[in-house]
Amino acid sequence: MSIGNFSDFQSACRPGHSTDIALVKVINDVISTACEQRVTLLLSLDISAAFDAIDLIILLGLMSDSGITGHARA
Image 1 (spheres, rainbow, N blue to C red):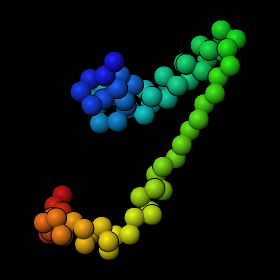
Image 2 (image 1 turned 60 degrees about the vertical axis):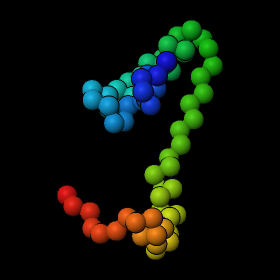
Image 3 (image 1 turned 90 degrees about the horizontal axis):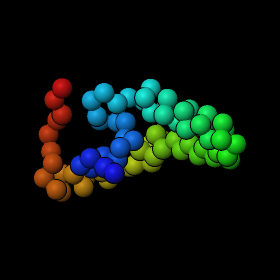
């Protein structure tokens, strides 16, 4: 089941949902399956460095070619 573009377990960009709640959900699932004597496998991926691989000069060029120019405002 999903709400709009979010799955029921999506934590980012939703009011009242945080990484703390996501962590509690994961821990609860692990403990529940352990209590049921079921095997649990947790795969955790860190993709935060993925954006370090972007060549910013090329990205800015593509943005400029698409009409996106100027400076960001806070």
